[in-house]
Length: 86
Image 1 (cartoon, helix red, strand yellow):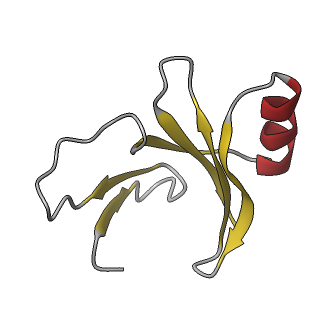
Image 2 (tube, one colour; image 1 turned 45 degrees about the vertical axis):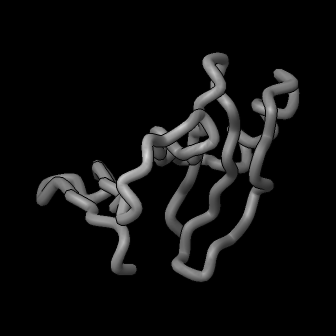
Image 3 (cartoon, rainbow, N blue to C red; image 1 turned 90 degrees about the horizontal axis):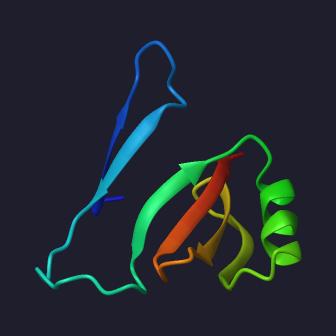
């Protein structure tokens, strides 16, 4: 996609770390995504977050790049990207 670099395990390709390019060299605030977590059942995690009254800042969405995800604020105010690959 030109702005993200993903490293994946050869033995377990679902174990990944992604690094986002910060072209503008800005200090990120708490509205930025600090971590992405891939889960087996993103729908269940979304429902769990709603039941816990966590702040959902991006709704559960199927993205064109074959990812189903939502963003939620953690207790420190950082945004987490919770996802599964479709």
